[in-house]
Image (cartoon, rainbow, N blue to C red):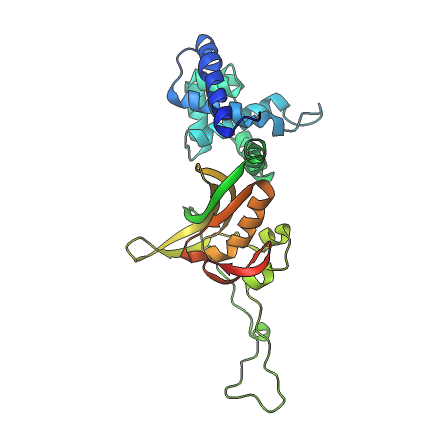
Length: 296
């Protein structure tokens, strides 16, 4: 009989509490809650499997790259904003340093090498690939009741990208006032992004979404408008508060324009009965497996 997700998680926790943590305490000494949390995350995601092996040529050895990948996860678990914070913590915290894979403080790479490695991880979409692999392993065979779809603002310390002014020659001709002449056909309106999405593949859907930093605005729970500079994170979350897929876009993108890409992305990963969205996704047209329908 196939084990449920709950059974798998209980078994995973029993292994951590009964075998792994006691062994680590004997080897490393006392562990804090954050140490145990990091070990649990690393044990579950197995980030080393996604780090390419070192071929022996020019470049940093694979062991060091795997250690930096574990430190990349530690930075997120400890909620550190800067790489310098991570390096200071690695130098002072022996248990954390050894969990990441360095025995001595002198083995820790320079901050510039960390920055280059973290840049490579981001460019290769390592976090996205880790998440996709985890969902594939734990959720692929599960029938999910509902997926909740929503977005949240992500503030950034960047300057918003300004939209360049359209040259006069490139501007569309102004529409003449009044009724058209007899036999004259009015120009067809430009298709909206939702209308264009109806004939796109998933790769085209994702490529069409804006990604630059700009200014977003929304109404809070009291009905007042709030603005922020940065991005917007669109999420599909399964019942049980498990994130299935996510897309990062410009802050100004309307929620409804990310609904179809999110739905297609989640459909490739899991099987669910229905999607749950709020009124922000109430759009005139949307694409489902059965054709254009209302997103309500």
